[in-house]
Length: 467
Image 1 (cartoon, rainbow, N blue to C red):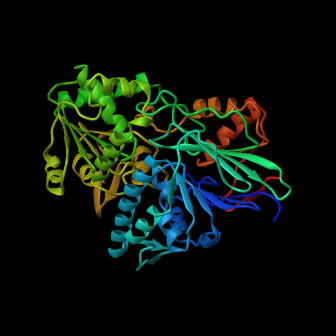
Image 2 (cartoon, helix red, strand yellow):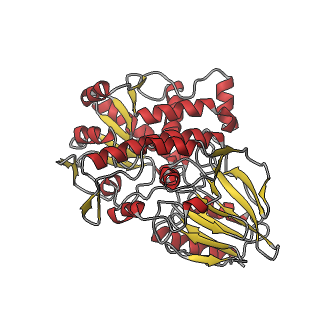
Image 3 (spheres, rainbow, N blue to C red):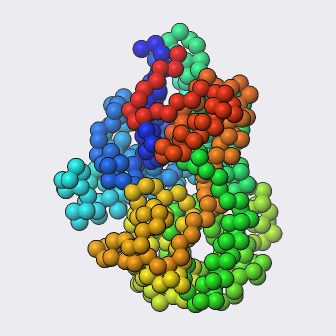
């Protein structure tokens, strides 16, 4: 093979999750990310398909960040023979460990209880176990932002700040074909909003031959942060006045920490009722917060200034971490409280018990702070379902439902276009991934109209020859 080939094996064809992009050159076989498919049953079934390549012949995984839809199938990759390198930041490595541990535990429990079916048939054996997670951790090689690395002949890479979560990166890859010509590929990974809390803004990259860009919110604009905070304050005022509860389904990595950061600022400024209680009911989120505290080198200047002034950005008056199931059950009697619990899309975890307890009361609030994948319980509620089934029970949805887009860890259309405009040497092709059909099509139209760039919407499994 003389050319450079790029095949889209996840987060393509309108599927938002399961990120996995396969690269094949004369010098390397690699994937960028190896994530789990989530959401609709037909998408989750893709996790049980064999890889479209031989894991034993794979040299490298370039890992953009630690969310489940980017790291979730790494244990399966190792189980099927992968013995290459996983290139990432130190924060991504540590966060990926707790994400994979938690997902593996839930996966094994679901299989054991007969809750997993593929093509209508129950599954009797898990795809992988915790020993495979440990094997993944032995494959990591850690690099810093900005370091240009000659990995091997014909392959050079550099990691840049993606601004999405702690330690997240965009990858610059310089790849040679058999004729010795170098092509530069840029994988955005998941990009964050400019001006997000705690971590720095995404780096701008000045040139590329080919760009692979996410489009989670490619057709939408988030509410600005000020409007989001005002809406959040209004919810907090309501629950203080009504002696009610706000349930926030939290993503353990990044979203939880940003919410805690904002609550700390609001409490410190005395703009919320002093009687409010705030509970973090997610063991995984608690572990992730400890990792955030360990890697302050990734913080932006505002967060560092607060710490230097003596503020603990993740602790404040009225805040309590729930340590065990007994304490979690006691929250059924909470009043004037904010309960943050996983999972972020209501697909499992302790939040389900809180939804059973608090959804039927119209004085309560359900606050979504991140993207809800189609097919998840969170998406059904956000789309207006009046009744939902949780653990075999029919639960009426009477609580007030909110979506605070300003807390999203994803760039919106404006941020994505701002990032793309900074390529001084405009790319030959832009491949749009990691978005549902509405968002990826909207971004394609925007890019073609405003930047006059050639764009592609890859289908799942589609391969492109880049020379």
